[in-house]
Image (cartoon, rainbow, N blue to C red; front, side, top):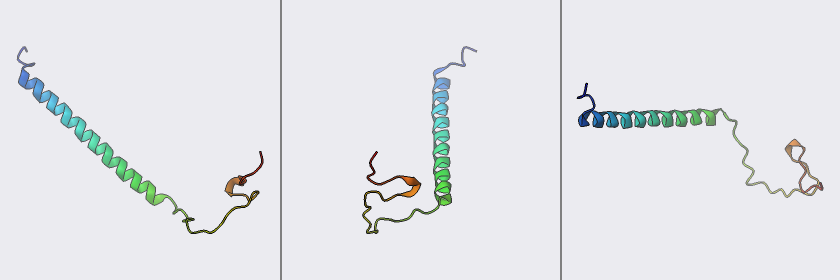
Length: 72
């Protein structure tokens, strides 16, 4: 049993642990990228409002009933 903790065994265990951690991290990142891609496809497209020529006047309402430049 005293030969179990030989330097070679310790080095092999450390390398195996680092490899296992690298594999788990890579799989976790791969799953996160896949999940975000699925979420992005399931979201409705956003409207492009960059080309609208609209300057709201005080008192104009936006979605949700929030008033632009309204008095408190």
